[in-house]
Image (cartoon, rainbow, N blue to C red; front, side):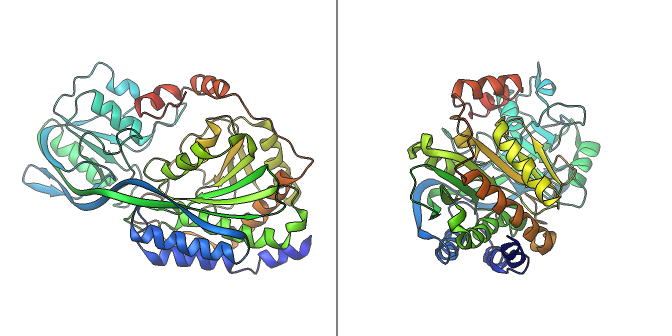
Amino acid sequence: MSEWIGETFTSETGWNHLETLVDIGNRMAGSEGEREAAVATRDALAEHARDARLDEFEIQGWERGTSHIEAGDTTQDCIALPRSPSGEVTGKFVDLGHGLPEDFEGRDLTGTVVMVSSDVPGHYDRVVHRREKYYYAVEAGAAAFVFRNHYEGGLAPTGSVGTAESPVGEIPAVGVSKEVGARLSRRFDGDDVTVAVDATLSEATSQNVHAELGPDTEEAVLLTAHVDAHDIAEGAVDNGTGTAMVVELARILADREDDLDTRVHFLVFGAEEVGLVGSAYDAAKRDRDAIRAVLNCDVVAAARTLEVTTNGFDALTRAVEDVGERFGHPVTTNPELGPHSDHWEYVAYGVPGVMVASDTGDSGRGWAHTAADTLDKVEKRTFREQAVLLAALAVDVADDGFSVVHAAPEDIAAACEAQDLAEGMKVTGDWPF
């Protein structure tokens, strides 16, 4: 057992692939860079697993142009949110603070430019996603949407708008730094400001990457991540680390293939950052009853403590905690639902799944979704430690002695209601039930 662990602590396989991904540059969904990253990932998996291939699908393409905010006699820096429509609008500037559902209740925001923060207050009992805030603004009649970062450092946040049915948003949307947001609120709240976005829309193609290891069983364990990233940064943490982790796990499990009782299917998605498009495409055509579990890596290795959202599947919670105890490594588990990464497109149908991330001690995204999401934010030691834990977890879940019961979709829907997620998912068009 100790031999594979030692090899993992000296392996350069996953880390080298992470460097390959960040050096590509723009990996925006549908871009040439995303395809280059997918091809490189397919080739890396082919060195360790069988049947490495790409599966292409059509998506709504979006390419960034210029954007700006004019306030008084000033021009303020901003970046367009992906899938914002082009347009230039002028309206009264309204700072709605955190942009919670109750902040919009009873408000007539017709023709206004609405700004909200990227966080929620500490006392609030759930995450309110960016797209939820955006569509509350749309419903209230806003003419434009400004998304203010709650982290200091002059970093404007990105993140897509749009829905599966209407991939392009309804009103121009931009992100601004905490500092720009504070300036706008202090100097121009209640004044007319102008938001201008220029973007190019087109038909585009994305792709998922597949490969396999282990016995040719009908049932499979899916090891997943997404390869796309926002175009404003290297996408090292989100989600170069996840894709590189899948490649590293393929290397480890190739050497431990005799330990696998169930087929392991490596699946790296495209177009996650614009609405979980790649995973939705795969889940819609896959025999979901033949999936034992989904282990989805999204923002791993950002901190030493592994954080695993287990979506109410107790057997997976126990498996994760057992691995942490076995290796004496800090692991936190969250049993509630996490509908904002690729595992969700399977979990919504009742397929057992987890999202593997990092417990940074902060409920926000940190460097992710900003220009600071760069390789220097990731530590090689942490990456290797988590590769050991996740390889052990994958072998445990693939073992004949492990079982986890699928849920009924109506039970997942009821859990969404109980955890106060349903309202927001309906607002954003993400309610699948």
